[in-house]
Length: 308
Image (cartoon, rainbow, N blue to C red; front, side):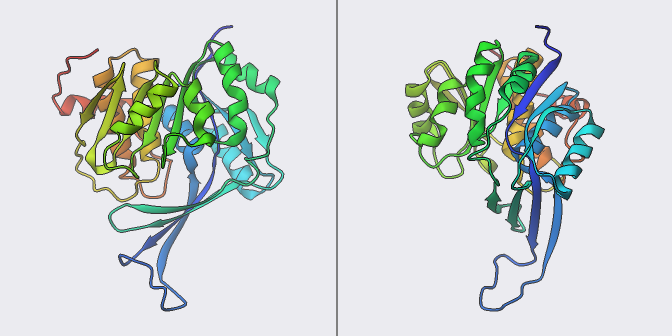
């Protein structure tokens, strides 16, 4: 079948409420704290879908929203963006929500409500139709999404899975995603050195290309048993919001390497540029980086790569 989509994003989309603290901590000794509270279209599916779309990629989204104000809003935004929603289904319990307590340096503490994602059953025929038309399937960790991994594989679609913040490599919830991935992304926020995680993931999926986001420490790339570290990139704009940074790293890397055919080292840098730009956006997925902006930042860094 003709690949009419560059990417199908599979996972959860919802509304995020970011609560920006004016101080460094919440004062639990008093009843009320004064904060700045902002709602916006976010979560992994929102950042990834809108990120690919902003970089000019033909994007479809597979997931669920509620029959509520938030769900209608998300459908309207995706339609305005031109993101295909033929496999955007209904969650009877409502639209997923997140609350993020935001610190002045951009760090967050996330409180996630995925509604019925643990028990939902997607329309497999509709999902098969979308996945068969996509060059790349970008999976997030909705429980129902694991049922689509074999369909994506049978469709000949490249599979990328984002494990998000990994606590331990042998987490049974993530095992299906690890085993199915051609490209595997994860956050090392809970690990000072991600190298042991690379080794453990390779025992489960030896041929997988691994990318680990390390926040202010940069990122790491693992290929064929070898781990390479890359320092962080700098931009004039300050880091104000780290929500979506991992999604940006994956979107930038996969757009460059899988969809545009660029080498691994160049694609890592383009992923880092995408992630760092995301961190300069306050509670918004409306103005994620475009491909022209990625090109401009990449050229301005004067980087030459001995690429693979």
